[in-house]
Image: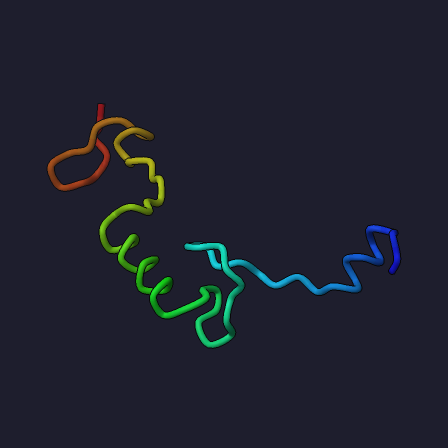
Length: 73
């Protein structure tokens, strides 16, 4: 068996891990290992566990008028 790290990586292909439980993924449910893990991930998105950070426009440019346009000084 080769001891070179590059040869070891080539000898044993690496399978991706399920982002929910860490088990190897299944092609039918990729990137998850099962329908259950896919459903758990979807529920986390729908319940707001995962969030995409945003910056409010008001924080960037100052206060907005009632109609949503930039306030004039």
